[in-house]
Image 1: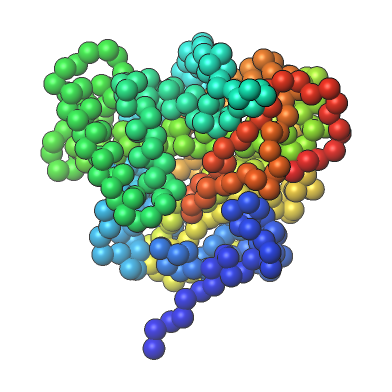
Image 2: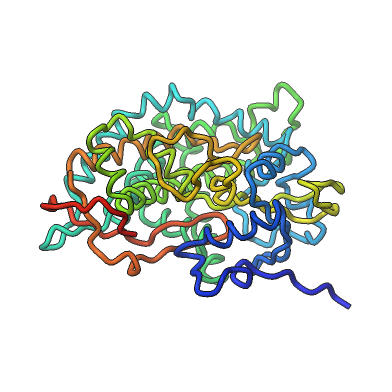
Length: 422
């Protein structure tokens, strides 16, 4: 007799809780019951769901939990969901080799060199921010989205004419509206990235990251990770996967981070007033938004390469494990008053992951969000929400959660009540 499916998060949620709008009540309930739970993820199957901070850190550093899907007991093929083979789907030593190829482009020092361009793009977007007659603007479509899309596309060398399409395709892949739409988006993005890679190989030109990666490509089946002469090489499949991952991860999470930070501030007017009085707290506000309103909700699936015990829970070989970064970052054992938004809180979240797969682009995301929020509030003091909080809609997937739109009123309001609105 087949094993019955585990309950979904929707089935475990308290009555009346909308997991898209507010998933935290279910995380609180699960944390009270234990650190690891068996749940069913529609479209993916059953997995072990990790919800506490200590268990999450342990899982993220356990070498027996692998990102390569071929360790899954149910694996038959990659299923066409992946574009190429990338760092997120790899484990050491392959992951180490792939990460080394691009790590130097995302160091704090290198990102500091990008700040003038990030600031310029931010100012251009604020200058052009579309407004209705009453001063209302959508901060997602007009600001939080085009900023990181422009920056990562310019860094890679993707033409400006492709920016909107690339985002639309990648957004469909990470937060699919249907399996058919995701498959079509994957096909179109694969074709376009293949064309751009081919052009970069045939016409070496400006010094872009895409050009450098294309120059490092090797058509041999699999570079030997331990061979000195192959450490800086990529297979064609790895090149495609690398460009795909940098492009998607380089903007999808930051779109949600910028809008989540502004949303959290609007929801807590006293905190917004404190930040407007002391703009030096902007970086701290971004860190608190990463904890409080995490744009990356869970890691990619990991698979037990051998039987193991995680936080007292036996995990059979081949089983999938999903780490909830959002739940772990609101664990009361780690953070006193976890459901309060406090921009002076000391950082200590798992918003960018932990361990070997800690987000490579974290310095870039932090820089973009900090610059975006600071310049927005400098340009438009007295920012106000323009719609009822219940009218806001959230788009979610296993990995990500973010607002579809964030309408705000840019004209200063005469009075700002010092109470939480959302």
